[in-house]
Length: 240
Length: 120
Image 1 (cartoon, each protein chain N blue to C red):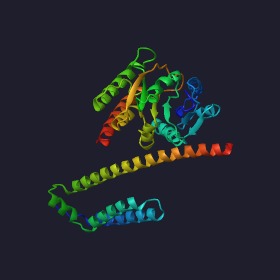
Image 2 (image 1 turned 90 degrees about the vertical axis):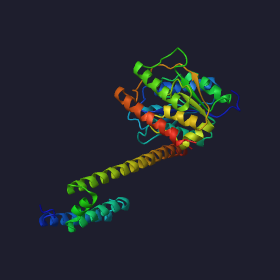
Image 3 (image 1 turned 45 degrees about the horizontal axis):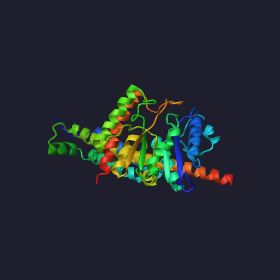
Image 4 (image 1 turned 60 degrees about the vertical axis):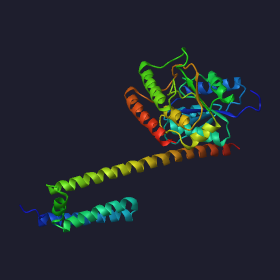
């Protein structure tokens, strides 16, 4: 990438991820350097109770530390606000649990750099390699994909993927309104309804390297119900 | 059957209502209750007081509305009021939640700025 290339930043929302955060930041750092991009990584600590903050302080990244847990969406939005104020052109979202392949950030950025999309989602279901999550999860994701399909009349294969990249147009939308809790499926509705071009690309995710998922089995049903309601409300709210 | 409220319970309810009104007044004075909620509680207390003095009031209202058993009118009104108030509290909680998220974000940004300033 030449020096006139866009200002790119990577936002990593982290909640109790002291085991994996070092590896994730190191991977992202390497990946950005390989792409010829000056590494600008922002870790948003969402009120972690473990050693996430002290781990991040030793790493080559910016730390934004929330005083208490506010939810993944609100933590991510903080990253959006920071990068928007820093005039970033493109922002990549990478989860702190190590599931997202940092070496594939370039694949996410490609449609943005070519100007063919405003938001790019890394989908683990487009290809046939890598971790595709547990059976129960795949059912949940399939359900959310179906809801997205019905509401938006288009095919989404990985509604819950948090491995995403977006341009400044999408960033401007996100600093104003972004779902505060589990934002991924709802944000797709928001982006599409606001006429942003959403594209999926094939990525290969791995199993999480540390920490625990924020969604358990029983909470899964509650999550699906809440998310469905939120997606419907987003459609109604953005009714033209 | 004498449908008018007996005197003893009337005196008791008047004392109770006045005591409740004083309690609300004290909470407002001490700043523990904002006017927004105080208005609601004052209205509630005034309704209680009026019903305490106007002994046949409840019966007359029940008869007017076609409610056979007058006390059930109280339960209906109370349940309705409580439900509305709970919805209102949920709205307030949602607003506060949103505001406290924004505040937390601001704190994080300020912390970062402060650290940057300390470095230079």
